[in-house]
Length: 379
Ligand code: FUB
Image (cartoon, rainbow, N blue to C red; front, side, top):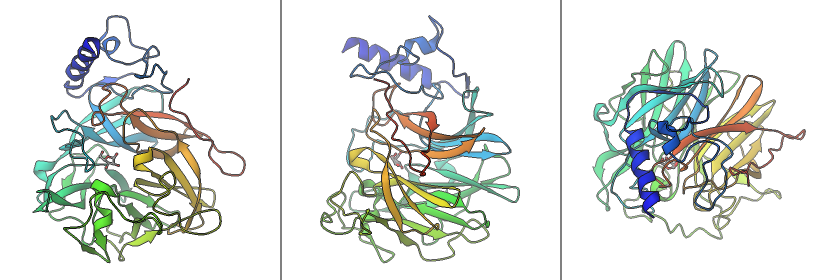
């Protein structure tokens, strides 16, 4: 127990450092990284070796949304911070207040941690919990999409989640937030996909603390359930999609459900916790196939389903990633340097659910387009 405490103290000291560049090389004996649970000798609490190492150790990061802009890779993660809030099912322990962007010219190269790109204090409508963001680029402007609780309090004394947008001329910010959240937006985990025809779509939503179950026909039920969805024998609650207007800042339509069907064409049911949608939507296109990927939350898988257009329906295909160390699993997938990459996160450095670290590993495809399931541990 004592050595675990010392390790956590060392980790906290390291991650309080400001902007830094960390190379993905094994830690030198006696270096700061050597004191962390980092490097090829690092082990999970169960004694397993990790498939990949954290991309950075100077700050805690999670929910990585990776993009290729101008040939370089930019990762828009949540910026986890130390808080005393105990873990709960609403995710109050995830009390993030700002964003910082990671950048690299290739997977395996040095990673730069950018300065603060957006702070909650500079978002007029937001109160707290700057959760999983995403980014997009169009015509010389970078767009940062982010969820946060607004300033109107609900029965738990917390704000309702909305989705905001901020812009910058640089991929690393600083970003300036619009004064109001995107009209018609709700819940969290925005992910923007731009199709080959230039049309952009926002996928969003998350159940439990993400509040998706409280929204019916665009209306929020402040007394709705937080975690008991009473949906086991019914189609699972779906993530949402809305096409964006050309301004990239507003919805062109009322959000629609993103349906996930099983192999016989029936909707995946709410009680099917290993297959149903929980949060963390991410869409990419390979050939003519649209891959809708997401997290199963309480069963801790990353899954994928495929379809032939951005709206779906999508047919469930399998697990992308087995459970990582830590409660949440949230990811993104990009193609760079002729390979496909899965960005994900675990809690290797801290072993605390709310202090996560972003990682990357190669994602492969079988000839039929299926994705072999990745194990985040080597043995
Ligand atoms: O990081 C806070 C929340 O936890 C995210 O928005 C979810 O996707 C989960 O990772």
